[in-house]
Structure formats: structure tokens, C-alpha cells
Length: 268
Image (cartoon, rainbow, N blue to C red; front, side, top):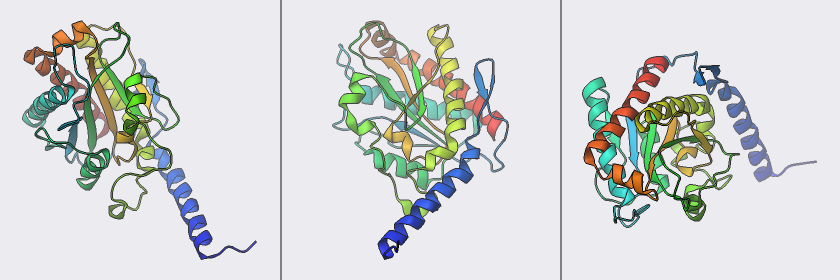
């Protein structure tokens, strides 16, 4: 069967995408399990560049709102700023925030920001919400396109869930199609999530909680190890009370820093 010009081009693109994915999937590695935490055994050669911290929501997009009226967008920005300060002060690594004020950004803009900087890590900061009032504490997420995410807030906010086959960002700056970019970082993204989750578990005195896989759009196109941190549930009264204490913002930021620091020591 003969193929016309467009069909040939599409066939070549599909084959190249498959080949790139096959060759780079080894970079995600199948982590070795030790003490319930994935161990990455191959270090990257290049030094740590910038780290992008993404305070979720902003502007007219409030995110979740607690019973006290506290808004997720404000919590995210406060903790992102503190985390930036801690990492820069203790490690001397340049930290870039996707937003440093109350502005609205699309997911595409956030992903493009990180990829254009060629960042070494991408950390998206959020707070959670559930109609189940007993849900509480932190959860970390890494990307998995085949997983499902049951939280009603995210099902309602369909912009946060991956639409299969849709890419994000300016594909002209990279030879790797951005709709498969995260595939090569899946192992490290999972390990980063495990390390941060472990530190947050200790802070919140949670005996055992593992990170979750989720098909978040914000992680799909990122061409570096990436994760989403849902710090607390604004739907839970105890969590809301904790997060209204600005000193606790520093405690959360310090715990996230410890997980990131451990990851960088082992992988760079």
C-alpha cells in the first residue's frame, strides 16, 4: 500500500517518537527498592542548574478555599517563597518561581517556563481538598499517564488531568517531543516524591504514607524530574488550623528542602 506525503510524514514521526521513547526510557530506570524507597543508581554528569518552584493557582484562580476564607493560591505562594529562600541560602542553587506575585498562569506557561530554563527539578506546590472531612495531611505525586486520580476536586478541575495525546510547551526548543518528555524522568520523579513524602510524613507524624502516581497535566510536559506536593487538606479543620500558622509554613518548607537536598546529593 502506497502512502501519500502526509501519511509518510506521520508514519516517520510516530516511529521516531517510539524510538526516542524506547532509547530514553532507560533514563527513568527501574528503581532498586531499599527500605521502601526507590534507589537510583546512576548519577547525572551535568551539575545542578536552576530549580523551578511552581506556586499553584493565582490571580482569579483561587484554588481551594478553607472554611476561614484562606485561599490556596496565597498558601502556595507563601511556602514557595520560603522554600526558595531556604534552598538558596543553604545550597546556593538558583531557584526560579513560576510566579512571585498574585498572577494567573496557564499550565502551558508554567511548563514552558521550566523547560525554557532547562531546570534540573520542577516542584509544583498545592493544597488539597476533599469532601471526606477526615482526609488530612500531605501527599506527593509523580506523573503516570495511565493512572487515575479519584479526588473530586481534580475530576471537577479537568484542566489538571491529562488529555491523552495533547502536548504542552514550545516544542521548537527541544528535539524530544514534550508530550513524552516526562517519560525519561519517571524513575527519578518517583524517587524525588518518595524522599519528600518521607520528610513530610515525619513532620505531620504520619507513620506510613507513600506518594501517588497521577496523570497531571502540569507534570506531563516537564523535561526534568518533577512532582506535585499537596501539603494539607483545606477541607480538614485541623490541617487548616496548622496552615494558618506562618511558622508552620517554614516547617513545611524545611521538610520539602530536606527531601530535595537528599535527592540532589544522590543524583547530581
